Length: 352
Image (cartoon, rainbow, N blue to C red; front, top):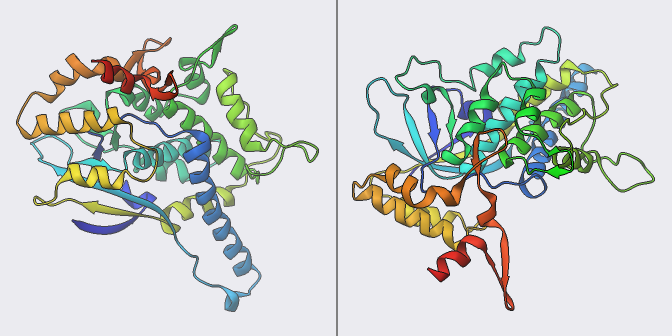
């Protein structure tokens, strides 16, 4: 393996695409367990940038110390053989949740920074969100290309002309009394968009809304994303502060690090995948089965895409109310059988 360090911005600064291979599971990070803590880590480094800038402005440069970098984890990938007219690409063997979330963060940050007057940040982020091309395939322009279960969402969320209100219309939380679960990628995007806006207003998501009550601004935001079609901005009466947006960008550019590991020919991606996924969101038995079957099919030169569509896509994909294709969460729900609890897909595989 070839290890190297990258910041969030440098990871996406070159014209490469990070492809989530078909044998990987879809996007499964949730707001409470992974997205919220990741945002808290990034906000902490942005706060450190602001603190250092404040000290520098008062002339106390002697007390300045280098800002410590925060390590977000690793991304393991293997190069994809390139063909003429296609974007240079890597298959993400491990770290697909992290790489997808970071791309969603940059998309959300760009959208939030457009609320600023004459800020260069949206244009600076454009280069991190689209491979310039020209390419033979439209999808080559995307920096992160998910499995089929997330491609519709990535297209829409990457559309620079799509306002946040449009996203909420396409992916509603309810229709009258009927509630829908927004796709997890959309939930993450909405959360990070409002988190960026809140940060630019000086609002910490961990602060309580009312000293007499327990819910924090983060709790309120999550509840609004899941219950309401329109997600109101937090503390919208407060002015946006450009210097806070700059601190957030500087944190992503200089103070939040990722370890990237690029596999070589003698490395076994299946072994590495199973070993590294002992961390993070637990793999289901069905995740391991899918990974093994489709990776082995690829090794043998079998038509992986056709096999996936015929045999596995019904477990992964579902048509949503907006006529888009999204992840099918049903098969990751739990079912009790006697004293034991299984996930629906695992239970189904056991009975086959």
